[in-house]
Image (spheres, rainbow, N blue to C red):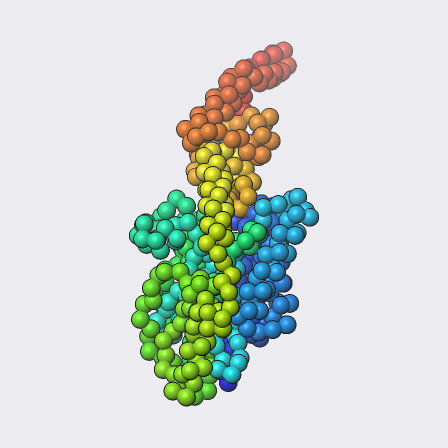
Length: 423
């Protein structure tokens, strides 16, 4: 009998003003969704995702239910974005874990779309279960770049699969569970800031899942907190089943939901269920062949899907380049600052703070402040600095042309003095 204990923590981070992540914890279903999109779009998309999964989990608890739930969540995100123009272009990643109870015993099914991750902590070892669906991660898995290059790649934030698109595949993974195992689900706000070694350290030393989740969020903020951070930790307790040995590192090649067997931790199995287990372990395509079912995907369909995917990746890459190709000047408190990007962001790409200048709002004419608060776009960092310098010179010139005259009168004496008003 498997008993689950879960905890979570979520935080907007140190840069974002709004938390667009959503988390879900039920008795058997756990989820993290990382929303993206301007205004409230990302927040709406991630919440629609977890709400849909919650309802689907009430109907069935198996791998097929996970895929159906995510597909219906995708339909819900698309429907709401079409109904409300302000939500156009919104999307969300999702990583979910469901406890499945069947004739083979209790096991955990993991599903993901996007770059939110699932980790399996077992026997003091940590491994990433899911594969990131991003341009840099796919280049790394194809052997075109190294892991270190992927971590600093210019398109590491460009997602190739996301809810809100018309078509995508759901990756599925099946985990054998043992007493003491921990499942970690997180948005990229954690994995981009905290190393796997540091995550393992926290999971191995903080027993309470809520406290461990909160500590991971704290560490992500301490390391920069550039994005929203969400963490769900699920602890596994099984009577009579001790933890397995630390697993060997697994290959980094992607495991597709409908083309290869789900990734597993290799553990000893009783010989009397070997035949049944082998059928559960076989891949989706092998199972269809064994049952005499026709191929669902033809070469033509595969080429068409590939072409559409290339167009989508190219479009997303162009949007990212267009958003990052400009700078704008605005105010932050009393200081003038320079952001890279465009005011308000574009789709799910957000501007980043590039420089806090020494110029303050007191060095600028009052009539320029409203324009600055809205953001003044410049084609380059050099042009942005030149614009700020012009504002300062304009203020100094105005001050020199507007002297303040005061008159002091004493009995029998009248004295007039002129002073320069500095702004």
